[in-house]
Image (cartoon, helix red, strand yellow):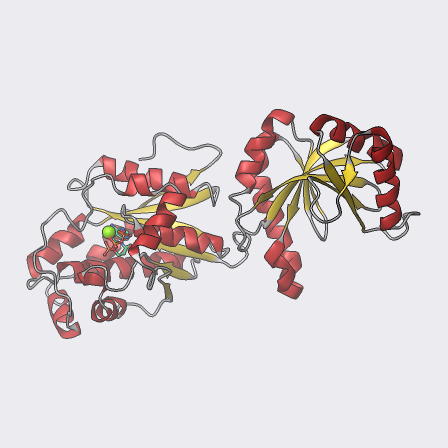
Amino acid sequence: MSKMVMIHFGELYTKGKNRRDFIRQLTQNIKEVSAPFKVHIETRHDHIYIKNIQENNLQEIIKRLQNVSGIHAISEVVEFPLDLEKVKQFVLSLVLELKPKTFKVITKRKDKLFPLRSDEVNRSIASHILKNAEIKVDVHDPELPLRLEIDTNRILVVGKRYDGLGGYPLGAAGKGLVLLSGGIDSPVAAYLMIRRGIKIAAIHFAAPPYTSEEVLKKIENIVAKLNNYQPCIRLYVVPFTNLQLAIYEHSTGGYAITLMRRMMLRISTIIAKRHGYKVLVTGDSLGQVSSQTLESLVVINEVTNYPIIRPLATVDKNEIIKIAKGIQTYPISILPYEDCCTIFPVTNSVTSPKLEDALRFESKFDYESLISEAISDTKKVDISLNNSEDELF
Ligand code: ATP
Ligand code: MG
């Protein structure tokens, strides 16, 4: 007998002919998170199995699998050759060890060539247990359900089951670029995209020397938490200082934030096109702050025709905070830091900016060369679960 883990796909069943690609992608993602443990992965049409697991790695492997999107559930299983006698010995030893009051054998026969039918297997195993242990059968609510699966070349005894994350396998639905600030919202937006199978990269706008190295550390720590759901994430850090200074010099009337957001979207669009990210993602939530009124979003959005997904557009702050706590980004997000948008106090930010005014301010300086400079000075780094880097920049 050997112990292994069985992975259930759940939602994938509905995906018809895409299913094979999804399973291939999921297998790849499972390989990535289990790489340090030197296991063997076996992909079949209905389940993925992880074999050769060392007992002391089992819980860590299961914990990692619980964060892999596209996995519906995970079960511990024990594998036997096609030999019912060995299975009988094993389940009897399990009963004698766990001492449940009631049990039930539930057999699934995937290979119809096996000489006994499912109910015959159930009866044969149950009578062996009843003969050798103080225990009763309870078909409705057994304390110990004993699940068996009979395959072409093996019998599996299915043990403890753990919930998975659900959703779709990461990478199955393309790549997106998340505008990641140090706030609460954008990491949650990133997580929600990952759960839908969108592989993400992050782009952060920093304003050195006004924003400190600690801000970058903070962003890096947030990305490291997101690594639990996507093992490797590319982070682009764009130096934004010169654009910001120009905006402060050439605008008035509380337009700074609007203009900065427009610059961020312009730069993100160029980087996304260049590297094949199909959508931009932001943490905008309607009505939260002045830059997120509907009028504001329209004026900001006007600079790009690139698709933008705002997963939090209609989500309440309480709900966002709940998710942020669940994915452990919350305590990092609430640490005080200077955002590139807060280094110069902006008073009376407009809530209903006018496009003509935004265009008029922008016509006063050569933002296109500043954008080109910012892009050519952009740094990128890959942050990953298996070898997190200490020195980033
Ligand atoms: P967050 O909590 O994500 O910062 P917020 O509610 O504070 O969101 P804003 O600060 O107005 O809202 O930012 C709106 C969105 O713009 C953010 O969710 C993020 O996607 C993007 N954004 C803002 N500042 C930055 C930045 N410095 N770098 C990258 N993206 C940013
Ligand atoms: Mg913010």
